[in-house]
Image (tube, rainbow over all chains, first blue to last red; front, side, top):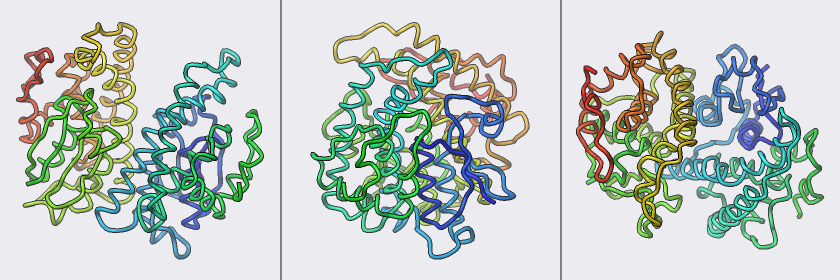
Length: 231
Length: 231
């Protein structure tokens, strides 16, 4: 049985779970707390980053970049039936998918998702005791989020899917971040109609539903609209 | 003619310059100052990140991730002669290349290269006037660098090339970061024999020599050993 080591509110883990589900590849999920720095986990991935994919009989594959490209490399043999192409299209279209993956897994994560997770969730589990969120960090991350949602709205205004005519790993990556941010009740959906329509379509996919049904032990509950595709 | 928009001390730009040179693809270099946020550059790449590759007659390709995978996608048609495979080997070996690219372009950059460049170089060109480097940031980045050099030494101890038996984009990416850090005279080479031997081999490649011969206007000169393959 394949295994995925993940954290429920980690956007990288969520994007890979979506990719695996869209590719109809079943995995056993194993929870890892990113703030724990467990020796056994660091032995598996010395960078300490999530997720890690352990395919039956293969060496572990570490991190979203290596895993997503590896799933694309082996889409044929691994997938049970007709499967999503994570990086579809010609060379130019594939470059656009990767530019957007980089934007949201890189820039959005650094400027928004990671600081909000650190302050609102990880801070509860600090080794030296629970601490209060830093108000300056929250304010900056929220200002950055408005800018990123504006860009997402711009992209979804003219395109069916984020990178072009087909769904790709860019859609899964952005849905992973938005679902974490929406769990934290950080998204003002009213202002962003095109982005909201796109996210509603993502939410209604079976691959998303399993994730949206989960709750994170020790974290506050998400807002009522969080799992609802008609929000 | 193909064009690459880059900054001379940007490790991402350097890794793509190395990939293009190893693939025997000639490009015209255009300097961009990352701290300038020029409107014309942001129109080309709204994320504001370097490098950007403009292949003749094609849409621009933005960022190291999209460019490196795009060069691998089109290695056949673009390359003039026998060309380096950026992600060589089977699925597992390619995943190891990407894990290491992620480690050094992601973790090393975040923990070491970017803060040292910010404090030692970008700070000289601050819009509000030149400012002094922050001593705490320098101290943290230097402590992190020792840990990363230890990991590099561990990798190069048992392997000819970083990710396995063949040179790959992982080697080019790490050489790009080390060359920037060495320009800033931040590397204590005496302690790291295996890493030093590997870097000496990288330095003697024609693709590296062009980069090592350049100087950065407005920045202090690099140490005397910087361009020397026998250092």
